Structure formats: C-alpha cells, structure tokens
Length: 449
Image (cartoon, rainbow, N blue to C red; front, side):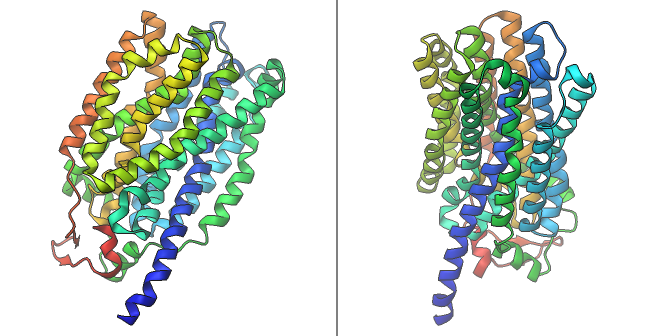
C-alpha cells in the first residue's frame, strides 16, 4: 500500500508531462504541415509552377500537398515498426527533426523563374520528407500521452495529440495572415511567405528540448520487461488484427476530408468564388482553429463519458448533412465564411477528438504503434490527400458545389461503417505474445485497458 501511494504522484506527474509533450510536439509539427497547406492554396501555384491558368497552378500545388499524405504510409510502415521495437520516445525525436529540416528547406527553395523544373521537384521531395515524418509522428504522440495517462480517460489524454493540428493550423495561418497584412501582395509572393517556413527552426528547437525530457511509456517498458516485444509488428497487424486496421482506417477518412474542406479548400473557394481577399480567408480559418482547440479535447472528454463510437458516429452523421449548409453560407460574405468554418470544424472535432483513443483501441498493446500508424496514414491517403485536389477538380469541372457535397456524403458513410466495425475497449485486455500465451495486464500495463 505504501508503495502504491508513493508511486502514484510520479505517474500522475508523468501523465501531465506526457500530455504537454504530445500537445506541444504535434502542434509544432502540424505548424510545419499546415503552413505548407495554406501556402499551397495561396502561394505555390504562382511561385513554383509555370502556368498561365491560376486554377491549373493551384491544382499542381495541391498535387504537392497530396504528396505529403501519400508519403505518410511510408512513415507509418518505417517508424510504426520502430515504435513497437525500440519505443515511443526515440521515434518521436527522430520524426520531429525530419519534419523540421524539411519545412526549413522549403523556405529556401528558389522560385520557378530562377531554377525552372528543379523548383517543383525540390518542393515535392521536401513535402515527401514532411509526410514521412508526420506518418510516424501521430501514433507515437498519442501513445506517449495515453499510455502515461489515466486509463479511464484515454479519450481526453489521447486528444492531446489531436489538439496539435488546430493549434498548428492556428499558428501557421496566423503567421501567414500577419505577413499578408504587414506587406504588399507582391512582397508576400516574392519573399514574405518564406519567413513562415524559416520560423520552424526555432519551433523545432523548442520541441526537441521538451521531448528529450519525457520518459518511455510504462506500457512499452512492461512489454519489454516481459519479453513480448513484437518481432514482426507490421506482419502481425495484417495477419492477426486486420479487422481492427480496416475499422480504424475507415473511421479516419471523413475527419480528414472535413478538415481539408474547412481549413484548406475554403481558402480557394472563399477567395475565388466569393471575392474575399487572402487575409480575410486566413482570418476565418484562424478563428475556427482557435475555437477547435477547445472543441477537440471536449469531444475527447465526452467520449470518456459515453460510448466513443457514438460520439464519432454523430460527427460523421452531421458531416453528411453539413455541406448543404456549408456552401450556401459561404455566399453571405466574411461572416458566413467564419460560421461555415467553425461549424465544419465542429463536425470534424466530434470525429477527431476521440479518434486517437478509438484507433489505438483497435490494436493489442504490442502492435499498437504499428497498427495505429498504418490506420492513421492509410486513412489520410484516402481522406486528406485527395480531398483538396478532388474539391478543386469538381469545382473546375462542374462549377457547382453539389458534386462536392456528394463526395462528402460518400466518405462520411464510409466512416460510419468503419465506426460500426470498430470494437469497444476491453477493460480486461491482455498482452499476447506470438505463441498465444498471455501476460495479465497489471501495474503499468493497466494503462492499456
């Protein structure tokens, strides 16, 4: 009993520290990812691609945006395997460095007018590096927080990593918005946008200092102590936990599409179809992202108080109806765009806040990094990767928002099916070795339940 009393405070302290590590780390990495996303909509078509048609330039820029999502499974395969072999903490340090160097490099690429085809090629390569890093980052950040935290509050603790994207998006769009209003449009296109990318060097430095101080999770330490570290985690996920992988992947698709609609494509739609300037469009996203930093943990908290699948299912159901309100709202002007972004991000938050817990609960602890990374990255390919491209293509082809609404309905139904397939957490979950024997979840491993 005395041992339990003395052990509880350090674990509680580590749980709070792990929450901060996941929150700050993913915020910094998603700043890097989000600043690229916004620049794809506003800048890259002019700077890195040679085309007289602005829409064609934007499509090309969104193509490089999609590369980041397509590259995520590479990061999921590579870093996901390492996360189950060497631990969560080491992988998180490596992914942060990779993303930071790639983002800083984007700010140094000369324009197409100076080096021709090398400009978009360098852009694609660095975006590929970003995507690989993000593909390995998410599961580690989620597990660092959830496996250090209270097992009865996995939805809330897991949401720490989920707050990262809106916070990163808030910082990225805030910096870009500040740059657009503080200089002329020509200066912003010529060199001003680069400052947002170069700033990442400072942010990554801060993130590294924070991450090296966190301890490895007690769950992984217990798995290692019992000699149950998976020898082939990727193979085991596909052969032993395929249903969980499919369910988690499908549940990921609609949240990404709604996020791409509400934070990336909205910049194109608001400026080109409804006459807002870049600063107004960015401000609308900043306002929505600021509110989403509260909506995401609230949704995670709610998923601890009620069935997690129900919360995600409600978000997916709302997403089916939302485009029929979203696009008409955009025609009202700046106020309508702000309202559309906020409500779109609310739909996203209901799915995204509990997502970390929902996804990780589909896999056994010894395969959790690999399985969660694969689900996260594969879902991103089918969701966020193609969404801005498809939205832009459908708008350019049909000149109407109705085909885009149909697309949103389809992906939302897919997510509903994935949530239906997903299993609820098992409070008596055990760690299983390769031969089917079991080690009872006790002590630190209780955090996996």
